[in-house]
Image: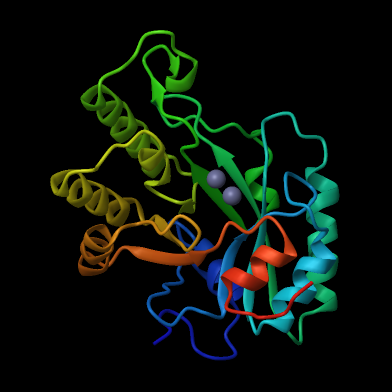
Length: 253
Ligand SMILES: [Zn+2]
Ligand SMILES: [Zn+2]
């Protein structure tokens, strides 16, 4: 089943209408059969290797119906206006075949949920992904610290930062929610998962079901579904090859 939208209903319309209320804007839920949606794709505007045109064309070829090109930003990137008009142009050009949204992926900088993006970025795009790429601590990012933090400390910082992301009003979707924990060999407790689900629900945030990192895990996913947290599908593809492969295509390029 494909939850949240009927056929012919455009994701941007759903976002648009919801935006009229004070509620957070993402209203699409994707569960098992969400294969026509991939909201997390990178292009040459950031660290992807293919331009938006090639990605959109590939997305059409593999049968996707709703995509979002969501490039990485930091607060200083100068290309956002060009990027936005470029993606809007493509969205228009392909509007009969696929819905193309424009997004950004921005990382958290501190425990309070501050994002690495310019204050005028958020209103320019359809979707804002918030991500924990490294764990913020009380003294900078974990990877930059010279002392070694215990697993318990890292988990505590991660959870505080994650709550900060959930509370940040600019964020629509949390990208690859627990992926950074795997890189530190950390496991999230069931209690923490329930706490996050409760907060996500309260703040109306969507969590990404990320096919590349296979997160959230089954237990977390069950908790999120049971608590009716919005889930959206993304692959975090950085190339046409990856996009085709992760979306079940067999086209070789
Ligand atoms: Zn990311
Ligand atoms: Zn990404």
